[in-house]
Amino acid sequence: VRRDGILIVQERGQQKECEGMYRLFYPTCFTTDLITADPPIKNNGTHEFADLTDADYLAALERSKFGDTYRTQLEDTTQRYATTIKSSFEYDYLNNGFSTFLSLAEGTEKNLKKIQDLRQFKWLDKDTRTVSVRFTFYNGNYGKFAYAKISMTLDQAGMYRMYDPESGAVTMKVDGGTQVDIGALNMEPYLTEGDFIRLAFEIIFMVWTFWLCGAYVRELITAAVQLRLRKWFNHWQLLDGANYVCFIIFIILRVGIIRKILDNPVVVPTNEYKAIFQEVDNLTREQLTVNFISILLCIFRFFKYYEFQPRLQIVNKTMGTSMVHLYHFCVIFFVIFVGFSFAAHINFGSSVRDFSTLGHSMQALWESLFGNYDLGPTIGNGNLSYINPAMGVIFFITWIFVAAMVLMNVFVAILMDGYASAKEEGIAVAEKEGKGSPDAVTDDIATFIGYIAKSFSGRNWKYSDTTLLHALQKLDQTKTDPSVNQKVMKSELEALKEKRDVLSTRINFLEQMTEDGIEELPFHNFWNRKYVTFDELAKVVPFVNHKLKDAVDVAEMSATWEDTVRYVPDVDEEQGDPTLVGRGNVETQIEKLKAYVALIGKQNAEMKAKLAQRES
Image 1 (cartoon, rainbow, N blue to C red):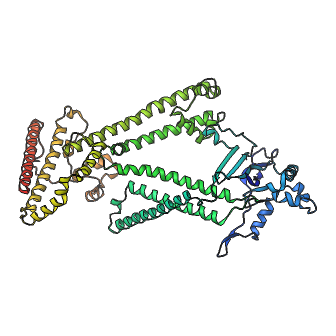
Image 2 (image 1 turned 180 degrees about the vertical axis):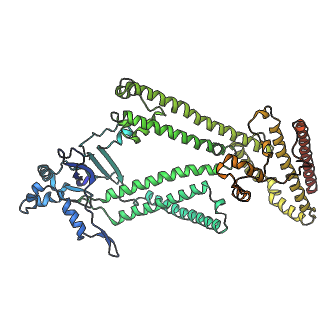
């Protein structure tokens, strides 16, 4: 049941002087810049109100008036126009445009007469950019109001497009045409028993959210005070913080909606259009947008809790292992994607709606990657081949080959490689724990059920784990602790680690130097052992830079290049460098070093076995 009437609002564009050499033939141009006249908002301490006496507002309101040809009739108080349609020819800040209201209480005859008068006085003309029809219905069966807004848009060239609900996403975004906006509103949110149950859950959610936010802020402050903020903050903490912010925004919007409903009760029937429906609908849509973002963040936060289980964390490990390759792939994909989008926009944008703008072109190509294209209209008898037969076929085949076949398969290969690495890492961890493979979720569930079943066993009640713990604690007081000289062990451990690092570095160096064909390389690591003195450089510099002839200062030169060169320790020329070896005995040294490393490993294992024996 419609309870108020129909509100018709138009938005009008400004005119300006045309530019270019043809402005003598076309002096006035229409723009998309809208005419406005909004009063300033003031606060008297209790509520905000619009200052309708402001001089700037009154001047803007006067400039917004149109219909100069019929202004005399509109101002004539002896005729009906002054009371019926005069206000429609000046800006209405409450409805953000030039409005007229067709009241249901006035009846069909008067409303038709008002429409005829508006048509007679040319209320819609070339400056009209948008015409919106707004009305509300009430359905008592559901106890809800339905807010509807039908907008018909024209651009400055007069383009208008009929509403097509079957059109694609790209087509729907083209300027001009009809848009339908419908929203269902509950102006009595807490009326039934179910509503109050929902209110209880909302209160619980608010308390829970504030508790989580308080704990998050406390951890943040503690980490900052203890100077470990960098260690504490990671991508999981970022997701948690963003999710909590969305929760708080949702609470603010929800409270704002309830407050607006309570402060603006709807009385029906009424002889005016209630803007409260549109305001509540806008706030509700913002709330749903925040909820959508919150749900996405919650989905990503679930991966944080998958890390406890080796099988569930396989996705986390895969993404972590592949991340470096993925963002390099994204750079390449972005360059190719934007390049093809530009090419499509330049070649086909003037004739094909899907490529009329760069944004539309990017969306059309993105959808084509997932099969949302038709071979006929694309390269057959339709769009692209009709515009440019050669370029249409070349563009389509090249794009599908490069993007859909090559890049998408590279993307899958990166993920598969990361998955294989993550799987191997999981198996290695399981083998260290003495298992053949990582535990499955079913294994964990079976273990948990086993613990529960064990707790109900009569024998377990008699010999409980608590009794075992207390008995071990009592016996621990009677046992002397084994003596452990940690100082000696630490020094031995550091010495072994140092020897291991030195020997590993030497082995790697010798293995590189014994590779086949190293003599033919233009440079190799062994050449780093060549060295020169600054005195030798001083003799050569004048030959490579004639400007420094007879002007080389060794001290000045060494001070200039001291950060560029690498210094080596003094070498005893008589004894020679003991580390410089010939290629003939390199293999022998490798074998000796490997045997020495094995001996150190054996000694380390024996030491660990002795420590374990002492502890037992």
